[in-house]
Length: 325
Image (cartoon, rainbow, N blue to C red; front, side, top):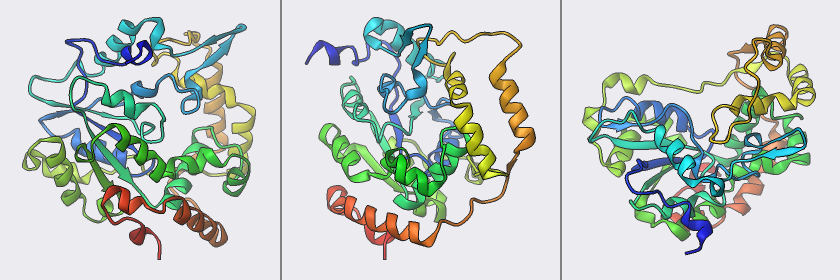
């Protein structure tokens, strides 16, 4: 084991999770998080932490900042103890006997997280939620648009920046990587479509996987539906805002990270002023996104059928026939 990997092994007496919801993004992970959070024997932090690939520029460009001629990055090698203390603080409120969870949806698509999770001194269990890959990509696009990261319409994003919206639906290569480091028995695959159709049955299977009593969940937990889609009223205005003010998005993470970006605490906060003004002009609505163009859906379905060939055999679970005719 190299020194590069040694820093990713948790020190003794550092709290680390018993299970991690690793993705995929826009596949029901937030709703599952909020259901499990109501279990008395589970503690799961409110926010995604992204610890096991926090240094991944390709997945987290907003975690890095070029400021006054210097790069500010998230490098655990600079101070491993600081990073592990930062990680453990997210679990500080967990009570004795509670199972500790984490929800970081980028782990599935990361090229680093699986190996680092596997290095830990406990056998961390993994929950992976998968959704029809085309539907997942389209849902992610609208999330990216709303949060300032999409600068084209959906078809243009596929043409000019395909990985940003399609990459996290490449389940075969992602799970192949996870299985290289983590035994299949420790990975629970949850289908978004089955979760929506029968939430209680799906959550029961997840509880069995992580080792808690399903019956201890309050009935009200199953009424949770988080992360409901809200879309900008005017698509073109939102795209213009995203193009002109792309740099404002980094500030959202400035004080959350182990290595701070050092953003100003001044009351005169330009990003907040700009975003507030934009929302007055272009408010978010509760409308559903428009239906995907039929030709685009067919194009992406054909693409993913080829890219995900062999997924059923890899997992020993039927998936593709449930998604594609």
